[in-house]
Image (cartoon, rainbow, N blue to C red; front, side, top):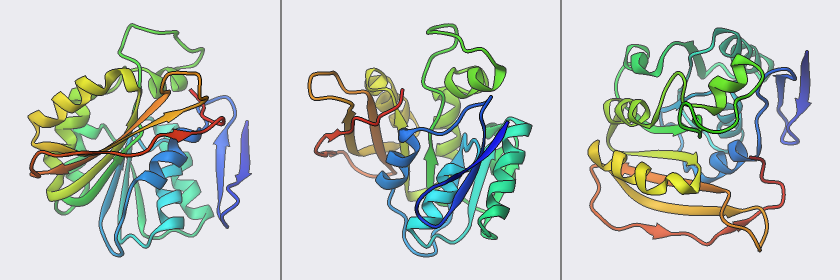
Length: 223
C-alpha cells in the first residue's frame, strides 16, 4: 500500500508500506553530504528518491540524476519528484554499471545509500524489494566504486553511508579508484553500544589525510 509522508521540511514522499521505506541513514547522509549551488549530482541506489528530495530541500544543486535498478521503485521515485515539483531531477531505471549513459559528463558529487549486507549473509527479508535494498544482490562495493571512479570528475566528492564493520574494506576499494578518504563519522544509537552507521566522504584524486568527525549519538537510528 502506498502512503504519503510529510517530511516536515515543506516536502512529501510517497512510500510503499510493503517495500523498503527510508530510514535515518538517508537523513544522515543528506546532512553529511555538502553540495554547492549549481553542482551536478548523481545519487546511485536512489530507491524512492529520498536523497534527491532532501538534497534539493537543503541545497541548491543544479541537476540531479538518480539511478535505481528496480522498475517499480524507480517509478515511485519519479512520482515523488513530480509530487514535489522537482524538474531538476532525472530518475533513471537502470543498473549503476550503465550510469555513464545517463549523464553528459562526470558529475561534481555522487551520493549512495547502498545495500549493506554481503550477498548470502545476514537475515534474508520477505520480499524481493527488501532483499535487493539491503543485500548485495544487484550490486556490491566493487560495482559502486567502479561506478564512482568512472562518473565522478577529478576533485569531485563521493558521500556514502554504510556499516562500520566494513570500514576497512570500503577505504581499500575506494583507494583502488583513486578515491581518497577525507571525512569519516560514526553514528551511535546509544552511548553504551558500538557504532551503528558510518558516513564516508571521499575526494577523487586528493592526497592522503582524513578528518575523523565527532560521533553522532542518535536514538532514532534505524538498522
